[in-house]
Image 1 (cartoon, rainbow, N blue to C red):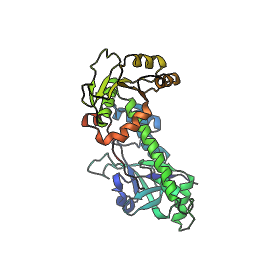
Image 2: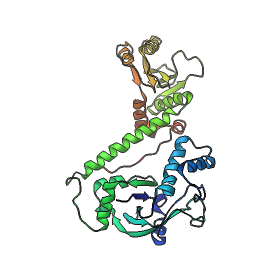
Image 3: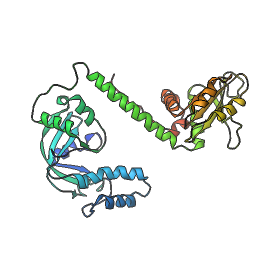
Image 4: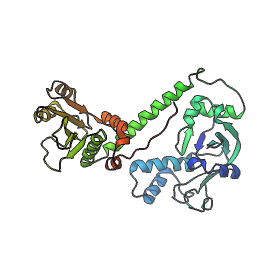
Length: 333
């Protein structure tokens, strides 16, 4: 079968009526006319020139969208866009090559200027699709290829053909639960990506912010030699009231070995508690060393740190939130 593409109609589908009434799909990255751009390598260089502050990863992300629209779309390919108000999918067929139209969106002539003409074939209700198709089409990416199974399901629904869902009665919730777990896993990794990019001072401040969110008052060591005490946390902030938590923060790729844990525990006094944070994780020997320590010690790797940040984020102060800005997403239960 021919390719099928999803093209979102702007934020919250605000352009969907124009898509339908004007028989087009439109995107735009404020790059300009791409008519004379001959291939993706040339387009990539143009993107770099237009956005010199973008990272290589961001450049590739932009290229993956605009490059597909410019070079991979072909006349005869199927195209889909979503109307969130009606909960329907417009299904059509591309009928033109790439067109540059700076007059489409006069509020910002380059924001939506890359056009393909479309012959709309009809609409499909979201509720008429298989659960697996709805999961696929739920992606918020502005433009992506729809592969064979969901594409065939869209065309089947467009023809008005009925088919039993690919999940057993009552198991749709289970499918949604699987999708939720997948989203949680992705968000966990994205938060880890953000933390890894922090510098050492920011990492130390983030851990201190977490401890404050947990109800402790903190003292952060100034730059320089800290004698194994990056942070001191206690109920009074002075370390006079129990529990007195001594924190060491290591922000590096390599795992911490047993020798580092021995050095840390050797500096703790009776009655203290130890927290050793290592974004690079810990060797098995380091874990054994912590387990047999006479002074209670918790080893916190990057995964544990993210779980605690998510758990206590509502209690984070502004300083800590500024280091890792997160937003809450609500999911049906």
